Image (tube, rainbow, N blue to C red; front, side):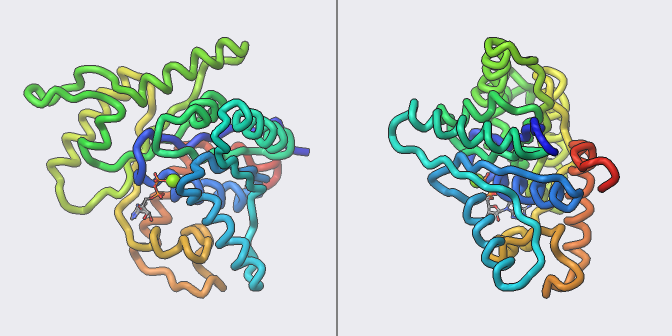
Length: 268
Ligand SMILES: Nc1ncnc2c1ncn2[C@@H]1O[C@H](COP(=O)(O)OP(=O)(O)O)[C@@H](O)[C@H]1O
Ligand SMILES: [Mg+2]
């Protein structure tokens, strides 16, 4: 018997940072550990996680053995109160039924996204290694190259702690920031980002976790509904050295997030 589930929210107010890609990889790693997983797509516009799950379902129906999450999407109807009701209904059902619920959110500050964030036990924020992406977390003073103040997404995360406290829940959320699409070039930019994120981590209370490299394979797997955790024997896709390296980076992420603790006893 599963539930109440641990809630993992993937969020960043900026689009294209790898939220949906990371969400799907965490979901499949949890399934591989033997956990039962519910998923919610709050990004109605792009619906990437929904498409990803649909593609996976199609591949499973074609005879491939693939474990599936229990997926819900909450497309907005234009009526915020009704949408909130539908989100809560889906959320309560999944939370009662599963070990973990993974919520993918849009790259915008939408009321439903804020509501989703307020239920996070674990928040994972993928961030591209660029000052443009860093800007949603903190303002950097260009002269001193130091953090001058936290910015809107960090403030939103802070606000959700208050919302939790108002509901009588523990205000703690384990917040992890993950650098994504790291290039093998541009060592200087990488070092500056590392220093700034290190400073910011202490200041606003997140943990920085080992990053994911820029790799074409992430874009290729989507249409088949597959993740790097599905590759290998019988997947029909041969693993290259780059794939192996990518999978190692993902395993490190799964370790850092402590996902193995959500596997039912005796598994994983
Ligand atoms: N590590 C990576 N290497 C290469 N491409 C990536 C990586 N992570 C994400 N992408 C690609 O970046 C784009 C945006 O990713 P997506 O997961 O949709 O981001 P978001 O959900 O934050 O908008 C997609 O084309 C995806 O395939
Ligand atoms: Mg997305």
